[in-house]
Length: 243
Image 1 (cartoon, rainbow, N blue to C red):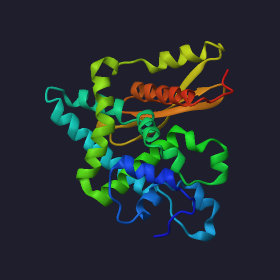
Image 2: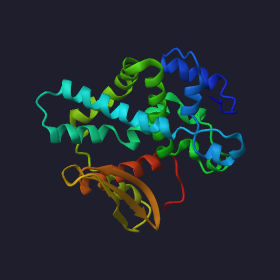
Image 3: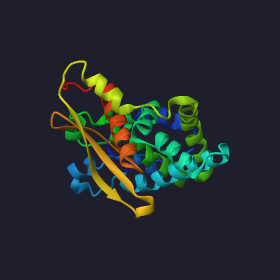
Image 4: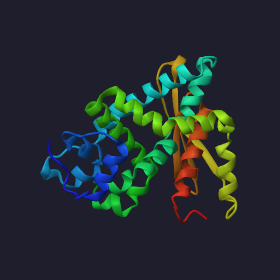
């Protein structure tokens, strides 16, 4: 498997130490850190990106978090467990863990994406984290993936359970933006998928004609809350030009 051309150097070594996993072959980790913009700009190289690993890592993360919640909170109903999982397995949380691991500095991406701030973009960081988890699962198995997921996500779960689950991100976002402007916010459902009994909605929050964030949930209200939470995470990265 072709390794990406970016010289990761000490940053990649530091990432491997934080992951605490012995990599017999770095190729999977390199692939997990390759954003789709890189092979797009370098089509002649014939390289791959991390999207397939992201698909796998998404399933691994969802399963491990679900198992932890099932075993830790035996009195919670299915609906309560679903809400708790959605509050933890979301773009802002994944981007936060990616930041702790320093994935943004290790990403291999196209120049255009990098110039537009791709290394700090929550959606890209969240996707990269899932890809890395996919690579960890293939390299070290479920036990290693569980160790990493537990280490980084259990503190978030504890925080949510201790009283932050019902935080109103829509209100927080409105209050933050209205410090400088009275322009209205709007929410729109941009996608619906799944069977009627288990439908997943994706919402986007729009401000001054610009999509600030998106999020998914098993109800329209939850999807809107996750979209607002994603927008707040974007603002916290120092995004400008919104006032």
